Image (tube, rainbow, N blue to C red; front, side, top):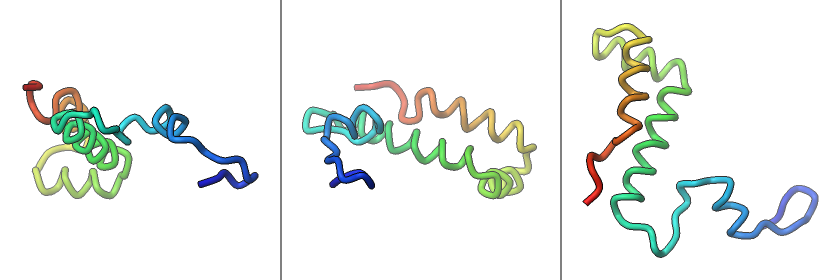
Length: 80
């Protein structure tokens, strides 16, 4: 892999930039937590998805966004 200028990108640089990429030592709980956080962050960041969830849950957009942000703290419960 390389950048548009042609300089190679190393795995360490990618791991520093994207936290959820993981490694061989990552536990199943850490990986699942990262996936859930990424998904929730995507939902919060896209207005149309947030409005869909707000209508489906019969809640306001603000409350739905607040609930999603709170879920990001511990999306999969306590670690084992």
